[in-house]
Length: 302
Ligand SMILES: *[C@@H]1O[C@H](CO)[C@@H](O)[C@H](O)[C@H]1NC(C)=O
Ligand SMILES: *[C@@H]1O[C@H](CO)[C@@H](O)[C@H](O)[C@H]1NC(C)=O
Ligand SMILES: *[C@@H]1O[C@H](CO)[C@@H](O)[C@H](O)[C@H]1NC(C)=O
Ligand SMILES: *[C@@H]1O[C@H](CO)[C@@H](O)[C@H](O)[C@H]1NC(C)=O
Image (cartoon, rainbow, N blue to C red; front, side, top):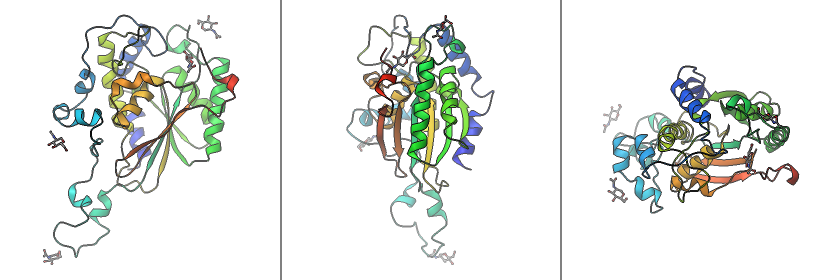
């Protein structure tokens, strides 16, 4: 099964994320998203969200070690091939066909995932459907689309958040990438991934917001960020158009940095963040929030 097919099964499925849409819509109406102001934060402990989204063994395992920088967890995506595929020897009988099991079980391809932050939108709109791109935002998306086309990569798919500003951005970019399939996904909507450390005064979502969004955004991370499937033969280039909080959280998680540090990074509108996931499970951040392809007067500062 191709990667594209997997995504379609997950995200092209209307009923699948209905609960999440409702949760996100409720959050939206309360104005808790990254570009807007929230209310006071409730009592909240650091790893609650992640633990809620994890199997029981995870929090008792080596996560703390990995997230504090003492170790790299190679099996972070739980796709590390079993030892008989990795120790260079076959188990017992070496007269078997060498192209069989061993070759099928090991990832071979590199995944390139290019995140696009949606471009500037009207912050005064009531609800998501009114928060559409400004004329400048539409121009920014054109620059991003041109840039992605100029990079000349063989894009496999473009997945976008169902929020209006991300959908609009994806549609504009799509003009420059004819033939690249578009798939929408509710998991990628904006939200409060995890309480930031240090906290900021101008953005204080309630505990319930972290509780709801955190699990969803962690689910999105697991859905999209992992090494290639063993069946994937060629390197892939996938575009994900979504939101600043989601992208920053993904970057922290992918690099095994403390996830609560996400708010220490900033991303310009329409910028490109590029992660590479090797078949070995190694991850590299190629660019973070690149917007150098836009003329300076098109960058949003406010
Ligand atoms: C965590 O990693 C350390 C060092 O590799 C190892 O000694 C320990 O057994 C691991 N603990 C768990 C619970 O996996
Ligand atoms: C290796 O596999 C072959 C074919 O399946 C079998 O005939 C042979 O007995 C096996 N040898 C060992 C040492 O298991
Ligand atoms: C991007 O645009 C939004 C409004 O659409 C604005 O709140 C935000 O500050 C902009 N980002 C940057 C980095 O200028
Ligand atoms: C932004 O949205 C508000 C509320 O819908 C509207 O009054 C205003 O004209 C919009 N601004 C722009 C630049 O579209």
